[in-house]
Amino acid sequence: MTDHQAARGKPRVALVTCDRLTDLDPDDRLVLAPLAGRGVRVDPAVWDDPDVDWPAYDLVVLRSPWDYALRRDEFVAWADTVPQLVNPADVVRWNTDKRYLGELAAAGVPTVPTSWVDPGADWTPPAGPGQYVVKPAVSAGSQDTGRYDPADPQHRELAVAHVRRLSAAGRVAMVQPYLDAVDTAGETALLFLAGPDGLTLSHAIRKGPMLDGPDLGVEGLYRPEDITARSATPDQLAVAEQVLAAVPGGTQRLLYARVDLIPGADGRPVLVELELTEPSLFVGYADGAPDRLADAIVTHLARRRG
Image 1 (cartoon, helix red, strand yellow):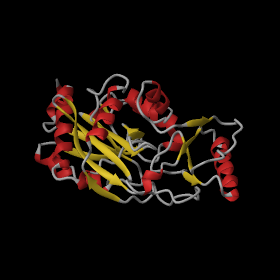
Image 2 (image 1 turned 180 degrees about the horizontal axis):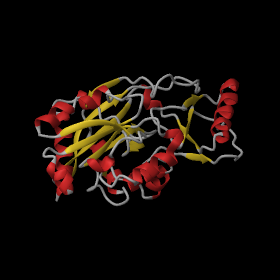
Image 3 (image 1 turned 180 degrees about the vertical axis):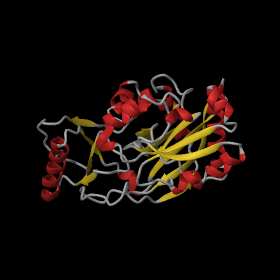
Image 4 (image 1 turned 90 degrees about the vertical axis):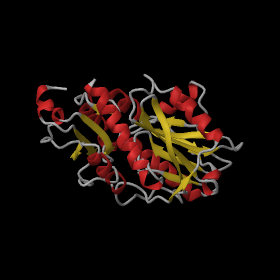
């Protein structure tokens, strides 16, 4: 901690957002009172606002910078300039490109099978069986994501147009089978928060199906979500632990992690996404979760102040 920071008294924390959520996402606002009760001053701060004095903060916490997807290089370069950032910049660089799924699969993590289409590459839609999903490798809030039926000729045309649209913008496309269990069991997100001994499971939620057809655009920063509380099963916890064990650099540096799982064809959970950059933490869906997030932030403050 610098002399300037010590002179201020209360530690200062910035919760990083974007200019469309200058007052923070409602879920993130739930941590403000618990942090104030712990003697922490909190400011919302827009990541690309040139007037923010980032070195003035004891900790800079990534929360809702959900407009970065079309400016990832700029976002990662900004992250590199904020040494007190959590999660840290090298994690941001790795996690904001979903090609990390290939690395995790190679490490033995059960993941949704994924193929990649580089800009300019020829691509033929899958012939089936089963529906599939097309989305960009860099995205947030399920933007630019569509679900396609190989038996529908119009869907095939729309899928080709979707990939070409991403390609024309210089974006890598990813293609995954649509897992039917999404429509019944839904997606399970396991939320881990930092504690004295590393990441610990805080709570879990169920996310209902969101993709009902081809990508026709989304109003706002993210698709509407159907969220309910859920308890994690032993199988889900085992896969989540396997996922976290494969994170480059380990998890001791992380403030939070969200592991998104869906039952695969055999019913066993497979990884859909590992969210280490700007995940919704859904602290409003579990008793005590805002306090646990506040405690995690205080834990990281203590580590920074050494």
